[in-house]
Length: 280
Image 1 (cartoon, rainbow, N blue to C red):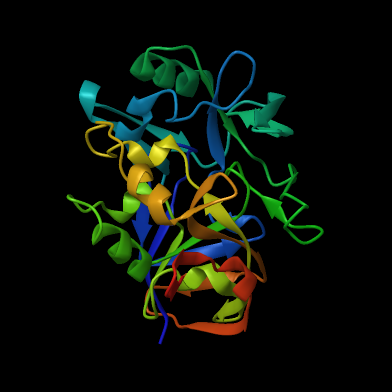
Image 2 (image 1 turned 180 degrees about the vertical axis):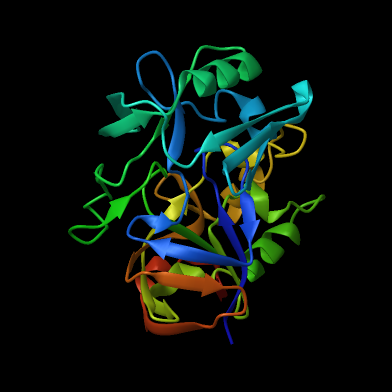
């Protein structure tokens, strides 16, 4: 039996994640997930890929907003749930441009001071609809400031398989999933075409290509070669290292740890050969 074992949101793109016992599914992903983003002077998103210390900004949901704690400078700031200024701009996430709303001068100043580079904090209002990649997603699917899709799914067995090949095991936070499940074999998520959790239907649309962010320790920002070095030996296809399944969805509601995944349809074309006698 496949069951939800962990749930995560990442309210500010590329900052720390928040583990939840239950999560609300909205039209563009989990509530609060990647609804905020830091941008540079060109309104282009800023990422851990270049600014590693963003990983040290740990978040929590409070009654007043999203609280950001930055331990290197022993400082914190609470992002209000709604922006305090009525200022908008076109902001860029990879190849997409959509409307973002600046949050406040105080937010801009705090993040700029903490990261020691000029930046601004933007929010994605409900009126701003960023379309998910139509090469894979259904018509009308929208997404927040996430890289490309509303959800990322990873099976615990897949991480266990990877860790069995490493000298030092890695935590799940290296891969920044939204939904983790237990049960089944390693990389079972690869072939999940359609499944349900409660009354919400999910569709696996594209295996997730992994980048150097997975090599950054989320607690120390130390960098290494793993897990990409090992994953490249057995999870390499079409010049990409793959780990996890990107999802789109229909329906809204709530997901809770312990909920069952009911697989309705498999897509075996998304599985590939590890070695001569093993299919993952």
